[in-house]
Image 1 (cartoon, one colour):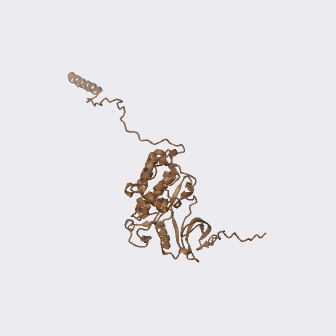
Image 2 (spheres, helix red, strand yellow):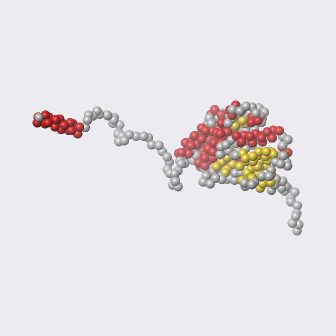
Image 3 (cartoon, rainbow, N blue to C red):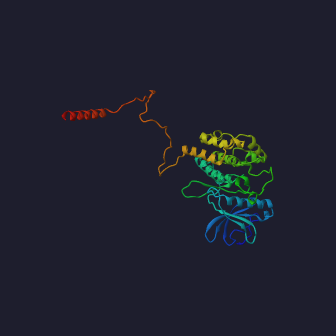
Length: 365
């Protein structure tokens, strides 16, 4: 038997980058993902031994000016973001030998939100906490005039942090839009024009109505996509379905989402969670929460009621703020009267004794 038989014709050829030491510092361990523009590798940064994710632009798209701009755009944008719920940029440049563009980012071992959703719906409290973390990433980006435009489960990664159930990080700002005026920047490298006016970008299942039809966008556009994510986490399925992309776009534009209480009646969804989710899915941006910070505040109010903070290992009961009341307050409707009062009785007794003593001294003289 030939131990060196050729692999089957349909076998994928080995990746030429796996096993190589790139740029004298990145030891490529495995290919862990791929997209339309390139591959993502798990690598070890030498000599410090840190695991990183290497995103490498395919050679065949390197001549595509639009693809190169988007790749460069992602590196420039994530270099501006510092929040712990946004993936961190480590390095950017060209691979020696091939000249391919690469981005080195922190490696997250917990997989994608998509992996969780493929196993079923997520507990409402956990879903709210994950949504809150995504909002924290968006709040920083929006404050800098950066709008993600492609929020979906594949672009929300999970990190393994001891003592935490879920830590999420937002990734893939490749089609993010930067508003130079909001960011306080002059027109320059960060404000490169990635799309022509009216061009449709994004993922159809999660695309906001105004983005689907080439209208003006702002931070509330990302909140709509996040609303789709939250709906999916809670119910286990998307709020809108269609057999075609155009059909999905029309669903986003015209069809109201089915209430969660109807879509998942066994969930016994808290009304406040349903209100927040459906508000984020409003067709008009003006009807959605005004900002990611506003969503965070609403989530905090809900979590304070459903899962208040605990101190120590013993779970605490719900935190309630009781109405302030008077001590010995009347228990009926009798009006409270305030009576005038003079000095106490002992005062007059002491005064009488003093006067008698003065009178006795005067007589004896």
